[in-house]
Length: 90
Image (cartoon, rainbow, N blue to C red):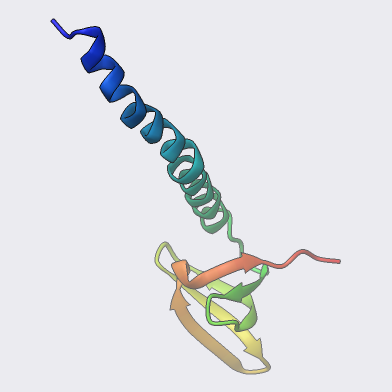
């Protein structure tokens, strides 16, 4: 059905796609998976940094929102997806 010459013509395109997958698509999928796991494992009392650079401690959690305590009597309600990372207790 396909001749060897036609298959040899498609080989560089196939090889390019394989390289593209392992260099760009797969690492991005792994990074997204890590982020989803981090967001789902957030707990009350965790110290976090928001995407905007605001440091705070999680006071309350819902499926969609987080209330951060950033100072005494100062709470910020933000989207859960706005959390960039959890700070480790050192």
